[in-house]
Image 1 (cartoon, helix red, strand yellow):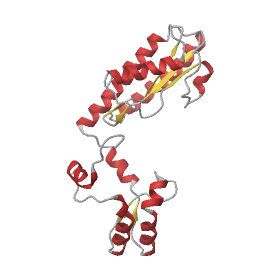
Image 2: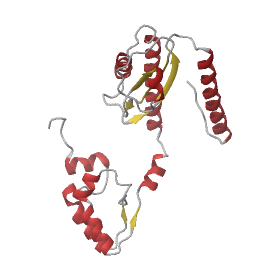
Image 3: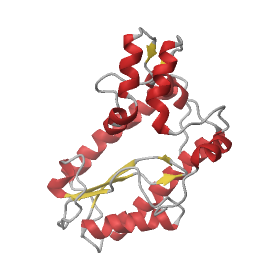
Image 4: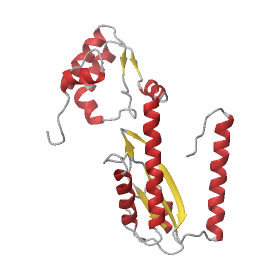
Length: 227
C-alpha cells in the first residue's frame, strides 16, 4: 500500500483484456501441468537471458525443470517480443516523439545555463526539473549524465559532482519517460559558447558520420523526421 494499490488478478484481467489471470505463486505448478499436457511453453530460461534471477528462482525454476524432464517444447520469448516491439501504434509513436521533444528542450535549458552555472549537479538537476515540469514522469529510464572536460570520456558517468572548467566541452545525455516510453538524446557543446579549432574539428567529424548514417537510412526507405 506504500506506493499504491495492486490490481490483483480480477482487475488485471479487466485492464489487460487477457483470457485468464492467476497469482504468481501458482506459476511453477502451472508450468508443470502444461508440460505434462504437451503445451508449448514460451519463456527465456537459458543462462544470460533471464531478466530477474530472483523471480526465476522463486516462481519459475522448478516448473521448467519438470518441463525439461517431460521433454516439453520450450521456445525463447525474446525474439518474438522484439519483433512485436518493432511495431508501434500511433499513440506509442506520439509518446516517443513527446519524450524526444522533452529531452531536446531540457538539454537546451542546460546549454543556456552552462554559460553561468558550471556545476554538473546543478545542470543535471535543471534538466530533470525542466523535463518533469513539461510533463515527463518522475522516474527517468536511465541516469542523467552531465560531464565536463576529461569526464566526457566516461560513457556512463553519472556522479555529476564536478565543476566544468573554462574552455571545456560538455556532454549531457538523458532519457525522460512519457507513459512508459523514452527517447535518449545526447548533446555536446563548448561551455564557453565557442569551439576551439581542435574541438570544432572533432565535432565536425562526428556530425559528418551522423549525417552519413541518416542518409543511408533514407536510401533504405526509412523516414527521418526533424523537428
